[in-house]
Length: 560
Image 1 (cartoon, rainbow, N blue to C red):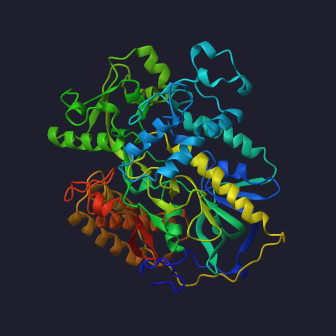
Image 2 (cartoon, rainbow, N blue to C red; image 1 turned 30 degrees about the vertical axis):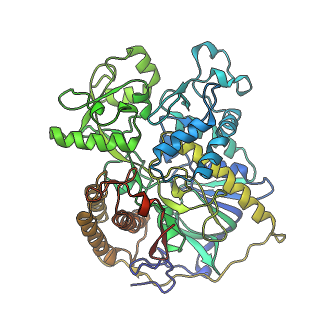
Image 3 (tube, helix red, strand yellow; image 1 turned 90 degrees about the vertical axis):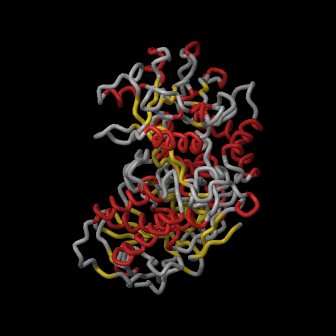
């Protein structure tokens, strides 16, 4: 079942998801190809030199990404009473002693500039009521911006927009800029299946647009495909977050690292029949309490920072308290806060819970942890360079060294901005080196897959995978269940990965099986507890042996 072109090193994983030959499909060309239409991808597109042609491919409409769903905000030092070194310290502390300090400083030092650029693009961050008369970007004064606080931050430095819809507002402004750029073309509702590689270089990507297949050729490619939350049944991520970029990188033999570190957000709305809506960290930043099913405010039993402890601590505390009380969830209580302020600050959340007969100002809101942010991903340096020549990456699909073993709240949008800019600048330099404007078509083909003959119930396998990962690789892990999960996933892989599926549901399943196994294998390999990775059979942090990154290269793990 192994494709002879496979470079992942895993015997179950074929090199490409579909069969194709250059003479049998259509071709598109660009100087720079960007895969993914979230904040990292769009910011990258805007940074590419205007003399170069840019194509952005997104699997859904351009607004449908994790970036658009970000509620809490974006972190940056904008107040004179705050300092860059304090934001650096908070990030390092939250990161479980695994952050790269040089990268942390590199990203956080750029935050004021990148946020200012968003304002210049037209992003309307929330401002103090005394400043509401200023209505244009030119009139914005950083001192007027309302700065909130979230778990793990020592100071108020979180910018938000429309109360709890920061990501949507940022994306609105950035999308308008992209739409007006003459050199950028956005291809929506197109599924990127795989990276095209030849002679140890990325040459573009294989893309499906409906029933049509295309080979997109590019001088340089930037991968910004986002997260992997859909690996789990309980997640804050939209339906598009199916680990596609991670999987295509594995198949192309690109190095990944830190794949054991999936961050679980402590507070996901947990109501039968509702979508698993994120309840932003900012709710606790404004003073909300966490109480158990008996009404007991329990965080004081686990951490002196109470509800404002980092996410890994709060998530693990919630799971422990749920076990103590034999309950399926805990509750957020805001009844001690000013009702008018709560409604104005969190209009989206107030509306979401009201649909189920709950009043955010007085009723306890049922919550439990859910998969939120994939810390692990494609290894990149400070310029967004990957291990594959011609391929760059930015955003949640990467492992940059910023987050360590646990991401500090509201650093993700910032990372997407900084690395979107960095990757695009470096990709631009490389693309401009080519004097010849023409792009070569390489003799790349795939013919090893079998047309699916079995009537597979894709949704049944998918739901089984999500439940399995939730039980075995969720907030708590241990060797026995991880080993069993890997064996089960390999069984599914044996009859799923060798088949050629006709549409996105099959491809997404193949991607999720590929990445789900790697997540479990990395979690099994790291025999300690650190940040979001809690091994109940290895409960202590072991800096002597494990203060290192676990890298995945051509089917093998290595410690760096």
